[in-house]
Structures are given as structure tokens and as C-alpha cells.
Amino acid sequence: MSTTTEVENLLRELAPQVLGALVRRYGKFDSCEDAVQEALLAAAVQWRSGGVPASPKGWLITVASRRLIEQLRSDSARVRREETAVVQAPPSTDPSPSEDDSLTLLMLCCHPSLTPTSQVALTLRAVGGLTTAEIARAFLVPETTVAQRISRAKQLITASGAEFRLPPQGERSERMAAVLEVLYLIFNEGYTASAGVALNRVELTSEAIRLARQLHARVPEDGEVAGLLALMLLTDARRPARATPDGELVPLAEQERRSWDSDAIAEGVALITETLATARIGSYQLQAAIAAVHDEAPRAEDTDWQQILTLYDLLASISPGPMVTLNRIVAVSMVHGAVAGLEELEAANADPALTGHYRVDAVKAHLLDLAGDHEAARSHYERAATRTLSLPERRYLNSRATRAAHTWSRP
Image (cartoon, rainbow, N blue to C red):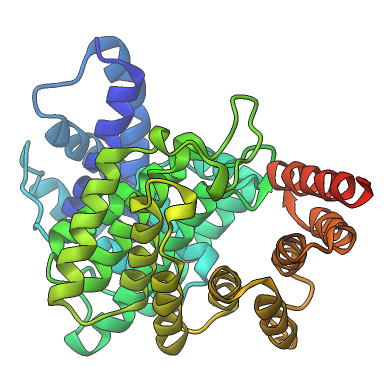
């Protein structure tokens, strides 16, 4: 008998292979995806009690194909004529999908006709093998909402006439950028949940890393794919020290670094070192390089902030954005002092993308604390706490406000 975790891991690994085999053979992405989901659910029940079959991939393809045939039989006369061809050509027990199927599926799920939220949901279900209920729980939204997103996404892909093949070379780089952004969104939502009682959702970070590994195996020469995987590994390596046993957030400077995952750090450092030396520099590589500088410092006070500031300067020049701006300002304050950071923050606050964002108040509070203005820091910590939807972050910010108030009132 197989454990639940072993079965779930196997099903998630096989999901894109099975879907790729069916779509490549029969077309009809939407119908095939539904059939694969039914096969995965059947396997989740039967394999836990009866054990994993000798050819799990063949079992899933056979069951999914039968579901697809049943689906076609219930359709119109036109579809029944198509079904005749299907019945005459039953699938082999263990077909070998093309080695590019996972990459093709990722690019199909990130079709430009879809919104980012739909791309994320469809990627997690079709490529990640997560059920609709699992995706809904991860993002704290109703299951019906996720189901609607997935259904609309499949309809849009069908309406677009997209075929199950890699996009033409001219479109591939743009589509790859969308794939990386989706994986990055999945990882970030897992690492720091945007809402709810949990600080992180391991099922999302783990899935993002797993998919990034698959993608890197398909295109090992792509520097940004390697950079994203390295960034995920180097960031997730700190997860064991990010929270106290009761779930309270621990800031980077106060984390017990001996608890960090040294294997993940070594793998991430090796990846980013190699890709920076051989590939064209991109934003994910620079972010991974910054994470590596943090992870390689034995103590917080040993952090090479000058190197981090230089990397942020490069990042801001090739991929500017509000969060890059805020993180760079923190680096400025660590190199040139809190007052210099506050001056840059004042100028950056004019950016509409930052207006009202809780992180602006959080950064300002931190810099005011460093500058010795603890009363003003308390006020901004409190304001930041009211604006975040994450309960662990809210508790942390309120605790910093209390600490600043005690420091200010101390004679």
C-alpha cells in the first residue's frame, strides 16, 4: 500500500505527461484535461488502498482515454463520428509522450488570451496536477471561483484555435516570459501568502520549485529559467527560520541562519554562479544573485550591502518596478544611512504604483526606527499593519510598533 504523500507526488509528476499524451493524440485540450482530472481522482482513491499499478502512466492514460470516449459518446452525432476513429485507435498501454510536453503545456496554459489569474489556475491544474479544491484552498478563494476561471481559460484556449505544439520561434521568448512570471507568482504567493492566517503555503512553493525544475531540465541553456529556479531555492532555503513555532514572522536579520537549508543554498548558488557566467543577464538572475549574497553571509552584520546595492542598481535599470524600488531603498539605507534611504523613499512615494501600499509604510517605519525617530516609526508600523491582509505580517508590524513605542517612551 502506498502512502497518501507518495501517491500525490506521483500523480503530480505524471499529470502533464498523461495530458500531453492525450492532447497530442486526440486534440481537444479542454475535453482531454477534464478526462485526465477524472483519471487522477480515480487513481488517488484506488492506488491508496490497492497499490500503485506496474505502469502508473499507462493506467492513467487508459482510464483517461476511456473517460474521453464516454464523453464523446454522450455528444452530438458529429462528435460520435469522431469517436469512431477514437475507438478504432485505442491508446497503447504505456505511450511515451514527447519530452517537450511539459514545456508545451506550460506555454499553452500561459496563452496570451488568458488573464494572469487564469494562467496561474490552469497551470496548477493542468501541469501541476492540483485539484480545483486544492487550488482554491491555496489562494483562499471559493472552489466555484477557481472552477469558473479554469473553465473560462479552457474555453478561451479552444476559441483561440491554439494547437498543442510549441509556439513559433518568434513568439517563444514572449510566451516563456509569461511562463516564468506565472511560476514566480505561484512561488511568491506560497512564500508570503497575501492574505489569511498562514505566513506561507508550502504546497505552492513546492509546486513552483518542482515546475521550475522541470522547465530547467527542458531548456537548461535559458539563463532566466536557471535564475528563477536559483531564486526559488535560495529564498525557500530560509523558510525553516522565517517563523517561530507559534507562527510569528521572524525578519531576515533576526533569523537563526543555522536553520537554513544548506543543500538548497548550495544548489542555488551553483546554479546562479554558472548562469551568470554563461548567459545574458536578466532580472531573475539578478534577484537570485541578491538572494545568494544574503544566504552566504554567516551573520546578518556580515552581509555585503554594497554588493547588494550594486545588484539592485542593475536590476532597476533592466527591470524597474515598485518592489525593486523599495528593496533598493533598504539597501541604500544600509550603505549610506537611514536618512539617505528616507530621502529616496520620499521621492519614490510619488510613484502611483506605490501609493497606499502597506510596504511603503513598513519600509518607512523601519528606516525611521534606524534613524532614531521611534515615535514616527510606531505610527507608520501601525498604519502598515492596518493595510496588510496577511495576519502574520499584521501581528509582526504591530509588535514592531509596540517595540518602537517602548523605545520612544524610555527615559
